[in-house]
Image 1 (cartoon, one colour):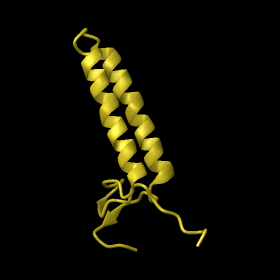
Image 2 (cartoon, rainbow, N blue to C red; image 1 turned 135 degrees about the vertical axis):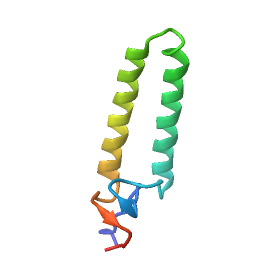
Image 3 (cartoon, rainbow, N blue to C red; image 1 turned 120 degrees about the horizontal axis):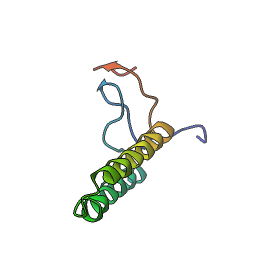
Amino acid sequence: MQGDKTYWFPAKRYGWGWGFPSTWQGLLVLVAYAALLAVGVRWLLPQHHQGGFLLYAGALTVILVLVCWLKGEPPGWRWGHRD
C-alpha cells in the first residue's frame, strides 16, 4: 500500500484544474492562501499600494498553483466522466 498516493486537490469533474481540497493538508493550504491575501488587503491597499498588492497576490497565486500541481491530481480536460 505504499504506492498509494493521496491527492490533496482532486481534479475538477468538468473543465481543467483542481476542485475543493480533499484532505486536511489541502484545506490548510487554501486557508493559508486566503489568510495571506487578507493580510495583503489589510496592509497594502489602505496605503494605496495597488501595484504592490497585485504583485503580492500574483506571487501567492503562483505558489498556490504550484502546490496544486505538485500535490493535486494530474490536471487535464474533463467532460464529466471519471477515467
